[in-house]
Amino acid sequence: MNRRVVITGVGLVTPLGIGVEESWAALCDGKSGIGEITRFDASAFDTKIAAEVKGFHAGDFLPKKEAKRLQRFIAYAVAAARMALEDSRLNVDSSNAERTGVFTGCGLGGLSMIEDSTLIVERRGPKKVSPFLVPMMIGNMAAGMISIFLGAKGPNSSVATACAAGTHGVGESYNIIQRGGADAMIAGGVESVISPTCIAGFNAMKALSTRNDEPEKASRPFDRDRDGFVVGEGSGILILEELEQALERGADIYAEVCGYGMSGDAYHMAAPSPEGEGASRCMRAALDDAGITGDKVDYINAHGTSTPLNDLLETQAIKTVFKDHAYSLAISSTKSMTGHLLGGAGGIEAVFTALTLNYGILPPTINLDNPGEECDLDYIPHTARKKDINVAMSNSFGFGGTNACLVFKKFDSSVV
Image 1 (cartoon, rainbow, N blue to C red):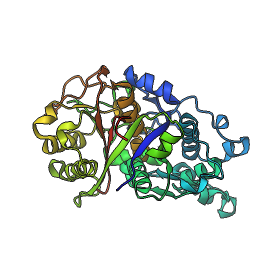
Image 2 (cartoon, rainbow, N blue to C red; image 1 turned 90 degrees about the vertical axis):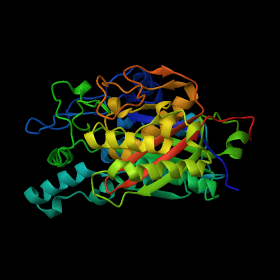
Image 3 (cartoon, helix red, strand yellow; image 1 turned 60 degrees about the horizontal axis):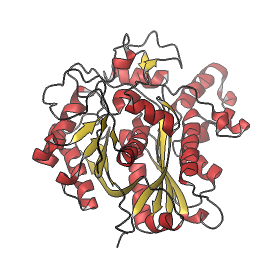
């Protein structure tokens, strides 16, 4: 029998705030974290907006030397992990370090380090490149540094599955604990690539919103006037624990992780498969893993990128899986406020989904003024909704046709 897995701690660094309290309050208030790009001069770019993390000081979470040296994405991940571990009140020491692991998702890693180093080689020569280039640019260094700073000696890994990476990080951690490979996992996603190459690349694909005059209204999932996604950054980390361990130490439990699904579209490098066929199979796989029928699901934190194709095809996929119940589901895209964190999206959205179950507040989809063609489900427009729910799903779909879904349920202490 598979071991049960619960969430006992959460940590957030998002465009909405530093920490869970600040980010969650802004999310429930329907505030946007999107504004003009300040990291570089974007005047020549078609897109001049992004969802940047504001007010983050690496020195608050890292030793002074490391705070200056580490790439931003690593600092975000370590900060979110520290917050989550503190929130969980789990003490990692010699008694449990080898049974506590780390698994993160990250799409592009230290892209800005690569950009800067390429220019250094071109302008000043190869001997001027930092000896930290390789360690600072690889995406798994987020998991590596979390392990180093927090002392977690168990399974340590990272995935780079594009926009599904954070969800895969949580799902794989869930599976590791289920099968007995660890008793606790520090899991989630991270990304920080608001840089010239990233914005230029997505602009070349016509993937980004160019609503530069109204940044806070640029991310508008499921809306008729959506014109692309907005790049965001940050990290969302969860502490997953085997249920008996969590109960034995008296941990507070946000929610139970009960299902995880994966699928591949086998269709196109960037476009979703027709009618969201791959996404449908992924959601079904997660429900099957959870042993839950679709009519038991109350809420979906949608992938909801604000691109014409994703929002339509995700809606179609939800209708395929949930049939008539699709119209009774509450659905929202928190990317309307945070932007799209790429490999980090699934991490923060897993945290948001756990908080939704714990607090009975369903975050809204802001900027949904006129639903797009065939986008006719309940996307919780504009305003958060108070409602106690029992089962929730979080969706993430990435380039290359890689899909990941998680199912969470409210923890029932009477069923242990």
